[in-house]
Amino acid sequence: MPVAPGPAGSPGTSRSTSATIQPNILRYLVMVADERGVDLRPLFKQVGLDESVMRSAALRVSYRQGSAVVRHALELTGDEYLGLKVGSAQHLTAWGLLGFALMADDTLRHAIETGVKYQNLSGAMVVWSAGVGEEDDALVLRADLPDPAIEPAVASFLIEEGFASVVTLSRLAVGQDFAPRTVEFTGRPPRSREPYGALFGCPVRFGAPANRLVIAPAWAGARMPGRDPVAYASTLEMLDAQMASRRGQQDLLEVLEISVAQSLPVVLSFSEQARRHATSERTLRRRLAECGTTYEALVEGVRRERVEHLLLRPELTLRDIAHRAGFSDERVLRRAVRRWHGTSPVHLREQLLRGARPT
Image (cartoon, rainbow, N blue to C red; front, side):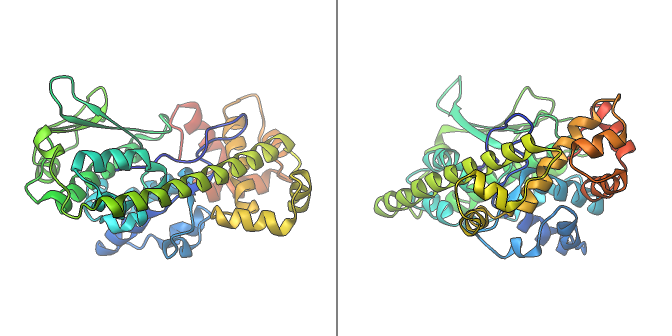
């Protein structure tokens, strides 16, 4: 079901840079890949993550980091149905307090609407919205990508993972006979539609105007077996507190990202950032740790964003770009681009100018 990534974008920064997403998808992705004999853990270091992110409920990843791991996983496994498999492997317990709230909710419809309301506290990487169908009281669940320029393979993975998790978790809650009325994808048809029909158990359409999953009124009104009004209400109080804390974390990250972006090509020291924001280094370091990130990782994200924007300007040389992004020379820039994208700045520029923006 849920989650929208990071804070809103700002001049010189992107919402995809901030580490604000729980790594639930990555945890299940690693598990599914392990079953296929593919170890994704070495990828984490390449995108600036520590493997401890898989073992902690407090740590977060950025949209870019998560997308990069997905892209590499698709390449390593060669499995175009990987999103369906990862979504099908999930359980509500992975969402912690939010998962408990959904289990204690009244009906499937209300549980999905609760998930949409608190989507920033789950771990999905699409933006969810829910509404009522035009013809009857059907529940229409829509999934959109926060970055429309994301490459098609990763986009398909994220949408398919999201819809597969909704159907899988709904069946765990209201019965294995559950099936949507229809599922619609904006992407192109796959080589085989059989895996989609087998999973969703309903008509599946590709090339649609929007990514939508429609649930008939009878299923939407199905009672949740663990419904408990008292437990549900008390859990929502805790979720509201988490949402308030998360907004504070996002504000901090956005303010620091703007500060870093505005100071480039100079990279301000951590002590200077603390002084500028009228706080101690210890307090700022603690607050960043609560966000699941570090100042170094934040600077890296902003620099990466700056490099990608500058590469879109053909008149700039690599020396110009290295200087404007705060690198000492072209060699350091090349190493950074290789670490981020696994390719050279020249090849990356060609990709960007063709409109194939990398993750």
